[in-house]
Length: 205
Image (cartoon, rainbow, N blue to C red; front, side, top):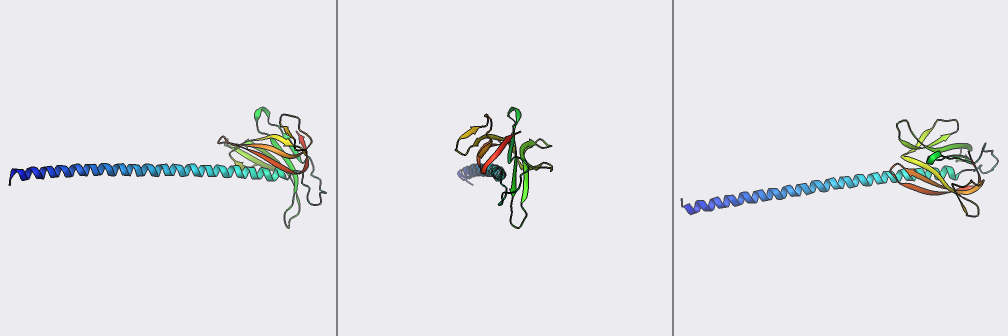
């Protein structure tokens, strides 16, 4: 065998090894990029799911407040039923703590007898230290309605002439809408204006 032939064979073998190493390196980089893209995609999905979950919590809490507070003072179609107390009462939270609202109204549903409801709405921690929005019927135990609600504050009331009284002023007796702020454990808040069915008598306890 000629020496030149052996030299060419060794060069081709070295070139093939180098090409294989380069191909393995490129493949490894591609696999790493694919793994990172999958990780980023999973993280983005988790962020989107968490944002969606938080949005559902905020909507549920807003709808519950809108319904129950928006019924304050409703006496039913015949308007003859005694509510047994003020239509709307507020208990101020001390030192920036959440306010508590007590609402009374007559609830009417199809094919059911009208029901007098007296609900206390407030925000507290449960036995495990988690924040919840609570709805409690008079004479019943507290049950959490919505989790991750950290604060409930009456920020103002709207009078029949459209003027707004701030929460730091003495509350007027009759109001047509409430301005409420809901605060959530993830640091966001939501401002609500809740119309009432009539000029509703309001007291502070």
